[in-house]
Length: 131
Image 1 (cartoon, rainbow, N blue to C red):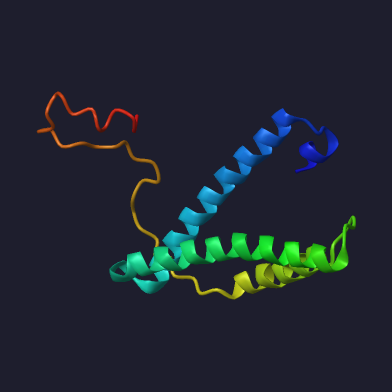
Image 2: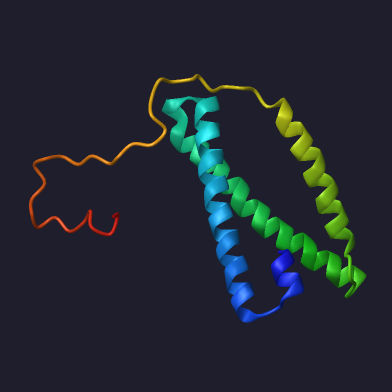
């Protein structure tokens, strides 16, 4: 964000959007894993639904709230909704420390090589893009 503010260019905008996508993907997968830990393995689909719904509503709600604020307040350097979002985010970030710890340490390696069945046909090109 600082790079984009200091050196405004199309390349930096593309880079910022790319980083936004990467961070959203990482946050979504971590959130889904955490919700699955809380709700249990049997409710993994429900956990994913909660996280995806919250992400979608967050993006859509933020854009809607900003549009309404700018329509009422007019063009300004610091819209009221910006201060409101920063305040809400700060409170939620502090509340995150009160979330339950559900992790159970497991004696497994953090990095593992992928393994495939040995009976895959030689014409199976479906696994190629994954590498």
